[in-house]
Length: 355
Image (cartoon, rainbow, N blue to C red; front, side, top):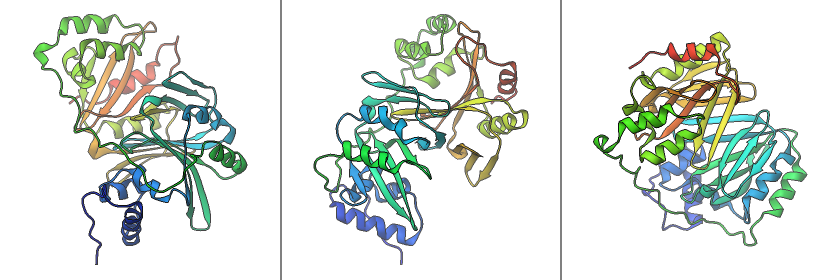
């Protein structure tokens, strides 16, 4: 007989929640994120039921911990949202932090860290068969994962333990209190309230893609609304089967690309080729050595071909969003500041079929 669970466990004890989790996973194998959804709680609440056992709650300035993550050597970085999972193997190198934003600019691990969204951190040591999988995991105030770091075989366990102990909270009791998730996105302004002429002028005047965020803020407009209003010269809607066509074309032509996937507190970037593209159910997967991408094709409600002027010429991106207009993934051609994008990438992106 299948177990029956209430819609939410917010009033239950950590032990009750842990028992429900164990009962659920006894019936079928579930990742912790999916189990949390089924039980009506956040992932952090579920993970924190193990504090004092295989989970260590972290405290203090997590930026200081991130500055030392490179001491672990080669690890697996994982960032995800509801529709995409981005895994990348490598070392944390060239780490720089301001008050609220951190940068990791290593040869493999490339991250933008938004610390104003970070609320909870844990060191996790979970048994998987005869092995122990160790990780540092970070969550926002609502208990949603923002970034995870998994040790790989041969990792420096003494360093992991030293970092765990240095940032361990003085009190280790199970349970976590999180904030309720916002009801939804802020409604967009009415289209007729947007000065489209001024929007186009500002768009045409950009010298760097980073200026796009200021443009959106200045015009009080969402990303997808800006795409709708700017016109086909700069933004063209694409078919929602775009991800498969893009990745398969990049693999066939050996075109190096940049793949951005973000959570509320982190953007993770892969730069390089993609080779092994596989579809499994609703998931479109890149399964390469050192990099994997898992993308829920059925969650892609909008796909856009976007062109932004810069001092180096037009920069072309393909951008994916869900039905609520939330960012799923962005794709760019491989490039560095000061250099134009490649003709091969632009031809690939412009070959994608418009909607």
